[in-house]
Image (tube, rainbow, N blue to C red; front, side, top):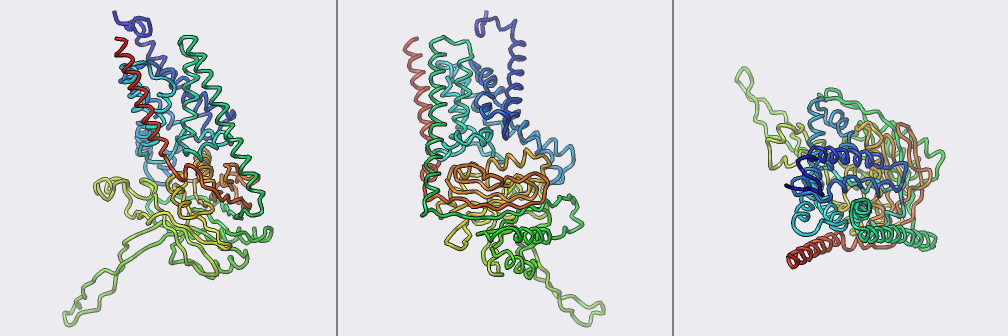
Length: 544
């Protein structure tokens, strides 16, 4: 007779499956309470205990199934608002939006399935995958997976400032490793394992809880000491939040009016109460004007009134003239001159910097929103673009760029989606960025959790590179984020209100380990995981 965990499989097979399903649902619920932030700052360190307990001792097939189901559930419960984005931003029907949301979470959940598969293989050959191996494998697959959009369970820790300071060593994925390792240790402590192993895992867990926040306290003290130094520079930015309501126009029959009048009015109002900053930041929003169709007189007047340069989004259109043959007169006696026609060749989601009444610097968005701005692999799969693409889609910009301000300050602009990618901000700091400025319009997703998740992603970029991050939004969750990852008091904007914020942030003159080495630590982790399993297999073979 076959046995599993000491009990007959044939009698408890369905009970085991039910127990695993309940464990996944419980883990998804706890993680949902934690993302993007929750009532208990420590909950993310224990939210995945049921998930890891379900995986413990599983064989490859079940490990893959549990991992994929769990990962898909985690994404669904934390990004359920993707449905609203499909409806409002893409303009898709209800069935299409539901199917797209389901396919999205299933794809995003795949790395969890692959990690579960590897853990199952490890369980079959050699000793049961331990906490370090399990947490390491999940971190590795989540980090290298080419997801459709950025995201990580580590975002649930963004309000625990001391815990996320390790991001300057290995980025957001290093924080994820800490989070998963904590959950894996606790799962082993609660599992039916020998008392000696429980004591060892508990010791490692306590050590982990001392080291990570301890490092965070040290780094925070160092940065705050550096901030009060007179030689350190600062940047002052004002953000304008107009709260312009979005209106979906699926057929694009009615051109939206420019959003600039509302932004100009709020900017001039704010200038009556605040001193001129280094930069005024306008967000993305409905009614983004064309870069070649701006009211330059109104913009120049606003810049003069505020006494500061203004950074705003606009759409760049590039055309070429189409060759037209001359037309024949209906009477056939003579040819008529052809009217020249323009053909759209490229369209860019851009940011323009207004200085001294003129626009001389542009930044073109590099990382485009899949399906919202461009069809993934559309250039290589025309049929995919024909099926789900838009008639006119954006083109990618040439890459990260800097915009120059007075006082030798240089800022790296990030448009919406781009603040979720650490490689872009890392490239910007390598170019000499003193600060990041990002703009977003999260109103498409309706629920404020989407905006807060986006805020959490941007906050990690500040800690990774030790550069301040200023986030300007249309509908809320804007913030002035210090290089420590702390949100400046009073700068986090409420949802669905027209408002403005201004703050001065310290610009540390430091380079982080993550800036210099990037994700090299992931390769080191891979080597360690391979060597530990190889050692386990050798010991098993010798025992046999």
